[in-house]
Length: 385
Image: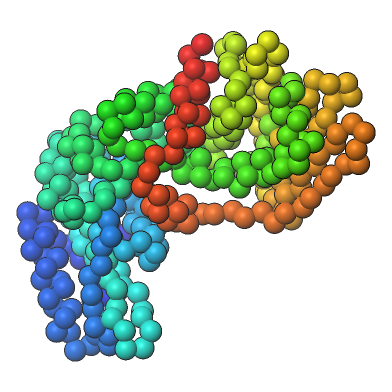
């Protein structure tokens, strides 16, 4: 059983054991009891603008995800259903817990409360997980699936759940083999797009939004923009601490593919190993070669991570554009050095969003991200050449 305190009141946000077969009825009883609870200071109103599903593969991640969801629903009122599938665990069976998360209103206003449902399946019972979840999805509202189980490889018992899901949120930063996993995801996204089915978002892509914006801003001036068609070399470098858990290869793939799709580069050869971990890949822009290299350098320290991208033109002397992150200072410095002109430098504050903020942002945009889908498709070509 999950390590949560026993449920005490509707507004506590704690879990209460529930009967899998009668979850909807028990939720209704929960709200009825809240309406007549003399200890409730403010009137209570249920609120849902969507159904948020989340999928994990073990109980530890289930506890972590449950806590993250409790913060997500503060900005996005919804019915949240957390699915934990452990096909190799015993004892076999389906278990469920329910809770509500309420937010304190201004004086005299109603409390806005959302439901959280925690469903755990073990052994062969995982095959019946969809039969529990599907009846709980709120009709006529968007359905989002937050995939927190590494590579996106949904088991067959989720087929019906995916069929009614409007948008899937993955996190390629959790992929164990980012090159192959992103290529696999690209094929799935392509099939879904062609069939006008489920849309996909990548929280890792959203993490890179500030970086992409800073790179683009380096070419705001007319003189800088004129250099874009002459880029010959691009290098990405991450300096990371000994315990850094993030997968920088996924970052490098996404940034490389983003640049290539925006500038019309086509991959001309397979990626090859450089530093470890690191890669080199050759592109072509018309008849001109473009060399892209990335490296991840791990330090035996606890110093904050840092990042640098540098872009050089093929002219002599070259124009050099760079974006350098100084995480310890919480700042990013951009530099543009163009022949015959004084260097231009700018320092900006580094805005880092956590997973809750990123998910909240993604829940605001129901439409497909065509730029992301194009980058994914190019990654598949880069990997499969």
